[in-house]
Image (tube, rainbow, N blue to C red; front, side):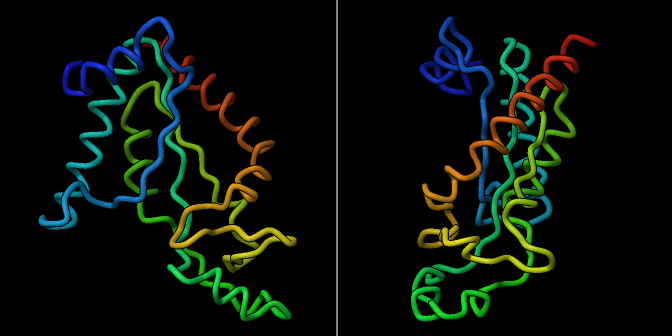
Length: 172
């Protein structure tokens, strides 16, 4: 597993290895300098290669969906529209990294995919505020406050995905 990096490889597959490895990404392609579809295929192949090595070492892998990207100044827009947060909603979109993560999980025996999008939208819109909690920091990262509200969801989804991963691996 030297292509993972010796130190990373030892940490991820050694005696204190995580259980599972949870990964996410915001990239849709492997390189900014290449054609999108080929570069997207290369990204999926790269994930598959790394994830397969982890799974072979007994480490379940969970790909966590990328969240929608509301724009870099969404919190400013929210601050300017305190009386009507709904004016700040943006169209539903899949996070740019999600397709590659999903495809990689589908193609890698022992890897699973967890989609957070049901908790990042309301009906046909993506709100930057749910309840009184701001979802996004500058750009697209989720705020710590909103991530904390997702703890029960992740506590349910991750172990289920991990179990599916173990079952898929043991079936081979």
